Image (tube, rainbow over all chains, first blue to last red; front, side, top):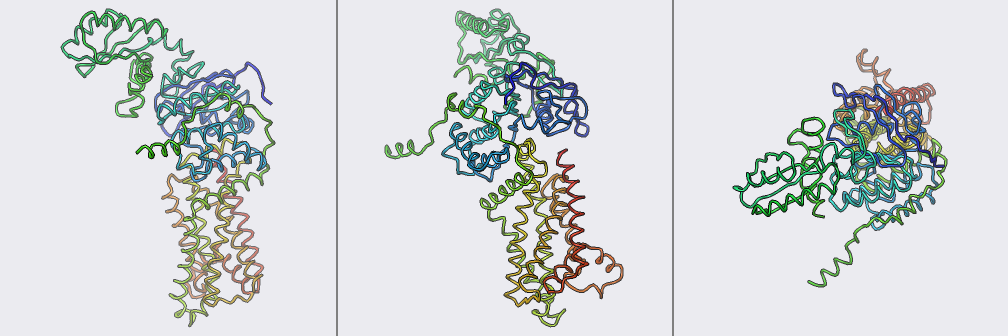
Length: 344
Length: 285
């Protein structure tokens, strides 16, 4: 039976986990309230996955304590396991088996008899739009379908806590928004979700609270609004037709936004932070005013976009250094992600 | 052109739009059934191994072609020289070559486990509230089927070439039974290595390093009486020697109680020691 309390789903204190010389978790503290999506936001290697693996009973912490619904993840691992599910970063389904076989297998392992397991599998496949692919091997699924099957497998027994480790990494925009809708439905039915992500906009859209993780520690925690107001509401990107107008454009922007204009290597690009006092509406107003002033000044603009601060900018603001060294995963630093959201 | 478009529109899967309503029906918390018994969970994992064989039947190549080649090769290579005729030698060799082939196949348990873990599906299995060893026990259940298959293939080849066991059908079945029991137990050595070693290749490498001396430095091909003393000392403590002696005696219709006891006792030790080491690693992976 599902317990309805307003307690904590996860309570972790000073978790430490080292792999050789690497300290993946360096005293992480987390308090995740029941019934919401809680975002763990951070770059590659920040310790998000290690934290999830400790909380899901896959790894033992070297030091510190973690409780899931009040049960210790080491000493009462079996109780914890009966209440959580995990969708890992890499497919946690068997690629050689079909979608149907995967779900029936899990249903059987969770104690359903064969007919009940089959019936549940059919329901899930249909709800996740996979009925047509039920008898196809998972290795022939697209990335989005595989991810959906993975989540379907995780909610087979309607867990009280669901771990989603970077559920949208590597997915196209349509599949991403499908996963978002599913996450909203899952949390809407009372399951607590711990979601890790590298994308600020994803954490922002889904989470009730966010913890920003870096080097195995939580460096900031709060509601999305609180976090954003601490780092400015967004960024304006301009593409000029004439590079000679750049100094003039920078002057106008600095005046309109009251913020420093960042230096760009490309002579036709101008980027500026929008403070907006933390609210999206004010940020849009400021950006619109800036656009009007640019037009009045006779500056020709080919492209204008307002995006949320990227993870990079969050990190710059919180740590005074970039989130990721150059040449790592381009997805984390790609401004296209943010511009796309504005265009959509 | 227009027909092509309509055909495509009909066959292309409709875009999936998650609906709160349909998701709601599967998210409504149902009664959670009681957790399955240790045996039921292991059998379910064994079913998974069967499904994998069904979808990737090529993997049975190892348990069919390899034993046939081994049997033919050694029968004709050594038969004339060692026993005067190949048929004569086959009566001695067949139980031994059956043991060698099947014991060699056990290493794929480690290789398979290593690849499986690499892929991430074990993360899900390890977060399930089921009897901990069931995923591995089920996997080895699947492998037992392969051992039976390999033994049957070798027996068939042997019968065609002129193997006439004195113990008859009962003796042969009992021999295969002993071999399968030992192989099941011996597989736990490889699950341990499959969990410790980093790659599939290193699991293979270690397996070969262990299996070659173990199978060849035994009584499989010749009686140890002509070997130097130090080698006889090794051959006599080699578990494969005792297994071959037991299987040979049972198939010949004159069971060697000492050897059979030795096989059963060593099987129990392998499961206890390497099963425990495997589970220790499995829980801390």
